[in-house]
Length: 174
Image: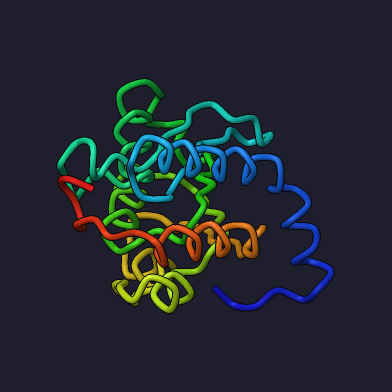
């Protein structure tokens, strides 16, 4: 994603702040359920939250149960595939390559994130450092717009609190 001019960045942040607060709440709920601090919501063209999901890697004992993949699975089961291009996935953290692939293949038209993947790696000590925009731009079927960061400081604080005190496994028992 290229950097937006300050005015444009402020407009993006303002537009997506309510949905991002919902995604951050999903991340808090994930932590409360003994999972990792990731949450995501899917919004329609007007920004209304239609679906929400959180990370369930630990409780499901499945490393693919990231918030975004859980949300994509739910969306694909419940929404019209033709409407996906008009949807925006708002997520507490920039999608990893696995999640980016799922978002791309589902046909979702936009992603808005809070904490960048690069920053997550600096905080947690582990990250596949491939920006989601790089994954999306490698496809030829359609484009996925990427916007962010939005409310990055809140997401980064949540990650800092979690990863500096967490002693569990990557998945499985926490």
